[in-house]
Image (cartoon, rainbow, N blue to C red; front, side):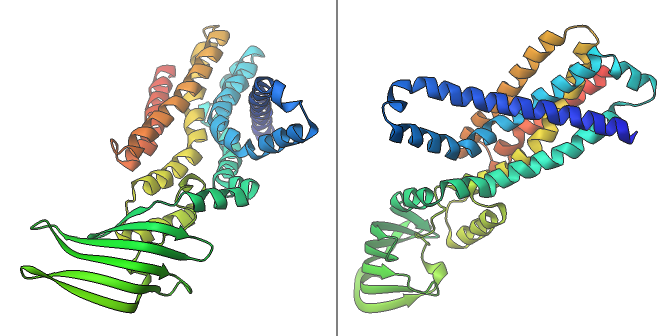
Length: 348
């Protein structure tokens, strides 16, 4: 039994590696031919293209991994069926569960690779480019519980903000309670915010009370951390670090939908290889025993592409607020698991 399990695992790994390398090479070659006129004009542009391709490998791996797992499943059972090994296994009492066991052991490695790619590899290859892009794109409007904050000038290197306006509102009845104009805010030691030259207007009865405060210190949770460089790159923030950021933003009254969506999406992406094997295995065996291997391969490729497209559509709907983050992240996986169960019931 150990020999048979190793054989199935080796066959699956072989076809998974071939599928992954072939699809990644296809993407690189297509990109190469699309930029021939520009790439080969100088040695520097050729090196720049090679560097850009190398840095984009984690993105390609993130996109292509589910499809390659499904293709490897189909090719594995195609090989076993054509050589009548699948029939021999069933005659010897080796059922579907025993056939899938070595493949699921391989999937643990693939899922770990996907986890490492999402959480660490991308940031390792992109390096300083991420920090520069994120620092330059910091949002100017923030919400903190009952306050709306406008940040006119953010200097991430000096960790200071200039010309800040803070509006505090009451919900019932809806009215403006206070307005603060702060000339400069700094965050020198991450233990407190320093507000300098504060002009504050508070609603008092039927009128307004004016205060001028030269210097005020406030706790970290009393102002949003605008120097957090991960704000626009939630997909590639490490899993546990992203969870910590969600809890931090929750205490500040910030919007959490995009961060929760990315956090749920990370878990769904790690489980996606198992889902597609569960879907592809009964599908392949149903069609193989009918002698329709070529049509099944095409159907499998179509199923993989539909999985990728549906995942992207669900993510977009979740990002737009039309779906709850948990539903948007797991809807496609759940559908394919149900479809795999239906095919498995039909196979039996």
